[in-house]
Length: 208
Image 1 (cartoon, rainbow, N blue to C red):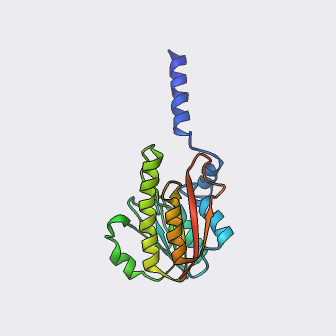
Image 2: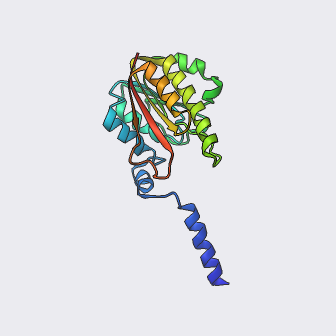
Image 3: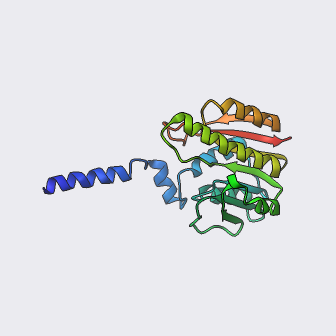
């Protein structure tokens, strides 16, 4: 009986930690709530989508890793604003404001208009996955389309846009829409993305 209980405990422990890797442990050690910080770090290092004194909007900002990283990139004279369905529970720097809201309902129009004139719009939004790749990709496309609409409405001229999308049938159409609105458009998959993930990032610079 004791042996069976031990095996069961080991299985439970394995289940809890199945997604933990060296980046998860590194994020904890560096006081970031999620390993997604390193995706944005790779994007920033390669494409320089943010700079000091910028005003940045982070769509789908929970649990807050991108907020913290963006805040450091823009400095004390910059500002970072975040929106997510979930409450941000971590302590945020003085140059960060985060609200709980649904970007799809556009209930936050007044919030966006109050803080309009963003230099960068970041979207790491992802739908609740179903396990069906076609359905998940379609839901991701809907979120990305909304993110692009926000970027089109609230980015300053020559502003930058970063958007996560699941690869699917609508990917090429979305990429074409982005190219119509920006001078540069690149596809990038950070090394820190999990190998099994279908996510990819569109990096658009220079809003027309």
